[in-house]
Amino acid sequence: MKQTNFAKRLTDFLTSYLSGERGYSDNTIKSYRDTMLLFLIYMKSIHAVMADKIDFIDITQERITGFLQWLEQERDCNISSRNARLAAIHSFFKYLQYKVPEQLAEWQRILSVKTKRTPGVINPYLTADGLNLLFQQPDTATEKGRRDLALISLLYESATRVQELIDLTPSCVTFSNPALLRVMGKGRKVRLVPVSEQVASLLRSYMEENSLLKPFTNEYPLFGSNRRQKFTRMGITSILKKYAGMARKINPSLIPEKITPHTMRRSKAMLLLKAGVDIVSIRDFMGHSSVTTTEIYARHDKEQKIKAIQLTALSDKVEDYPSWLKDKGLLGWLESLGK
Image (tube, rainbow, N blue to C red; front, side):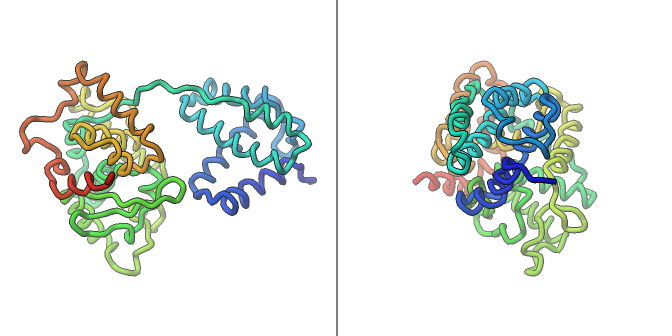
């Protein structure tokens, strides 16, 4: 079978250019690969162009905009996901400007496709009461329950993205005061994330029980299967949804209908904001590339504060606060992040 010019360039883009010339992370490359795979599926299902036949003549601005509409209408992608797919496409066609200049005019038409503006609100998050209810659900009398409690507690406490949590190994954990996680974020940027005493204790017990404190286990997955295989995004989402469903039956008002690992990240950002931590420190804690992203939480909090005060406000009693809010050493560490 003869390889098309499109296939050659796409292969080079995904296997050499992104990692070698641009230095993109494995997660970014996977995201770009998934975007191009979806585009191939779109071309086959909508335009009857098979993946092994597609070439540059088949790709136009109209088909790219059609692909974006297909993502929203047929794949039920939200605007943020649609824009992320478009960013991957733009990266590919910027690369093609220098590799296939014969069709530069069409590539520039494609690059003129704009992102959509997203609403200035964020999705639902868990309040302190909702989090406490969620963390009560795992059965800590069982090994699996203890593992799951450590996992969902750390997912919230560290505000890591789900892939960041998946990629953690025992070597990423330092039991200092406060305990710290070394997290590889977007763009291969490393950040140190503090963990409160309560969650650090859960994590240490889990690691001891699973022999993850021994030197030879340093590069094992921190959370994985019995065969030391990393959990998948779907696996972690399934664990979280299981306990969210249990908690929702107890008190539906505290647990949103739709809950994902990213809900835990949003919940941490909102509670940090309510605790009075400044925007720049929250940006550094969350690993946001720009404070503009973090400001979405501040805008949302301001708009919703009066309407949702009974659901979101923390108690005036210190003993009712989540443990990490009472940890002065941890708050001091957070305050030093932006300095």
